[in-house]
Image 1 (tube, rainbow, N blue to C red):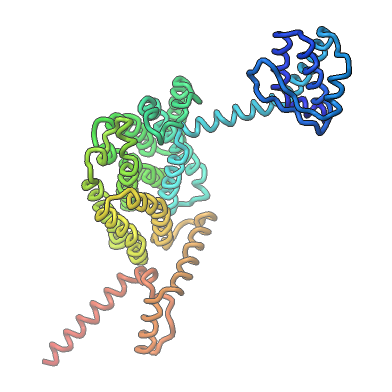
Image 2: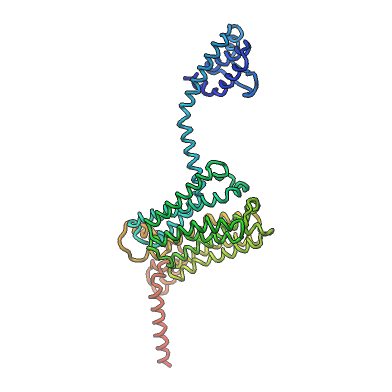
Length: 478
């Protein structure tokens, strides 16, 4: 068993030995070959070949093997060659039998990885996350809608894969010029153009078909439109116009709207869907402009027309980032005033957006790659945080709904988290203290704006009635 392992490790050396045999039949070479075979079959003896391209081989073995080589009469050239060829063939067959399965596994794994890169799996993961957020935010009977959700998510993912593959097919020559895209599968040769085209077509047809069969016409049309916008308009504009980034932001804003329309049977213009889509749109602009600033030289090599490539000091890029960060920070207030979320979303939005605005302002003041990277990294944790807070403070969980196991569990979890947050709320403690001192009442669970907004109409009506009565009383008195 040990000798087989040693022969396997030295298979390449044995092939070199065969080449030596074909070149020379001299006795000295035959002696070296015999010593090599002896060393390969004896454990704990080191065989070292200094060059695989030299015309002679040097072996270092133990003293006993050297003595055998010097004092034994070597076998005849024909006999020795036949023995060595048989040994090497057996070794190669053993090695091939053991490695066949491993080679096939590695090939399959590399192909799978290449197709995932072709479909931009990480970017598609973001698409799935925002689509699921839009679906859950509708607050429908989630357990009953599980097949609908699966069709929406898988269909949207396949459409995203298709658009990304088409984009790489068109840009493969430019990708080869850029450092950050030189490892893409068609640049490295891991996939051929025909394989990429076949995958893009299969993903596109499969995704739109699944959306058409499993969801509704509006969601299907949005998925098909997104493929056209990304693979067509956006890809065409990238080397021609700096406004390609704004078009790309529209592409990223559509998936959460698709989740909402799938859950609501195509209600495209609901305020919740508009807020979700607007958030994704304004989030992408600081995100991608910061990225394009960091890699502006790389984009120039690829021949892409980015805003940062058309200026020296980054003045316009930093202005666009700061402006859209301001727009993004206003959305929690709009959502609260529109009645989509509770007032706590606006309050927590202040904390969330304060740091985002600060890093955007720093980049505006000092336009360096380090500050651009801070904007980019901030955007990575900002979006998931915003989505979680939006779902947590959405008023859809306060509405009456038909009994559904999954929706009821989510609603219960949301209210439990709200209650724990209310206990840690500083302004509630202050208000409760004053309320108890003024009225002598016990601590209320409804002081925090999360709960207060539910009773806002009643509070406003009560206050207005009291004011009117007080005015009438004073009028009668005078």
